[in-house]
Amino acid sequence: MEFIKSAWRGEERLWKVWWIWGVVISIVLTTVLLFVLGDFNYPTRFVILPYIIWWLVAAWRCSPNVDTKVWGILAKVFIVLGAIGELLSLAGMFLG
Image (cartoon, rainbow, N blue to C red; front, side, top):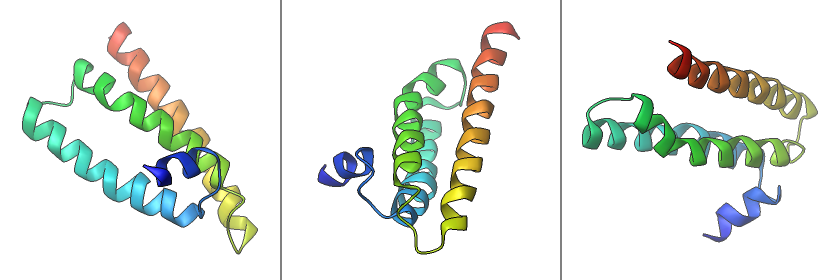
């Protein structure tokens, strides 16, 4: 639990937030949700949305915590693109 709080405050290394929580945990969480709920549809997206928001904010705040500044910049670019993608995906669920 302390890692979640410290990542939210931007105190963790970016690689931990990005690779462990952004990649590994999201794959596990998505797999479990698909197994339990059977589909990755509208209600499922809202189950995972708080996690996605936490991860985007934590990764953004931890982006300066790198040895090479380009990784922090690239992380912010991908975070913005990911946030736009999520918004478009959610909008598509409501509009389409």
